[in-house]
Length: 119
Ligand SMILES: [Zn+2]
Image (tube, helix red, strand yellow):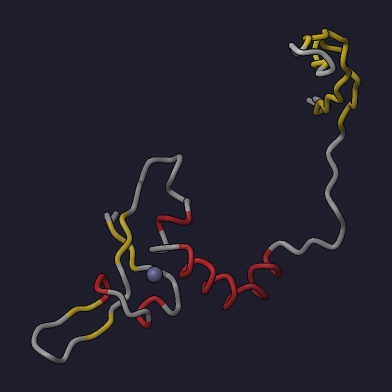
């Protein structure tokens, strides 16, 4: 397992930054940047392991969008069962009609969305 990947951005080597300049003397090259790889489970498939920055990620997505979409086509929307409930809670508002604002408590209502556990 290597500690570095070459950036997968198809245009990475064309962007004129100091971090891409390699070679000695006057004749140099712009080279694809290296990306530090994090092997821990949580980050192993994170985009930052494969692309040096957001621009390179977006270049890649633009170039390969057709293939990526065909990999998992979505012809229908997905749905997740939920329960929507109204919940009462204590809140307050201010009356500004006098010299000092007066804090007035009241019972407010909020909408709570709960996922339905089907397991
Ligand atoms: Zn890059």
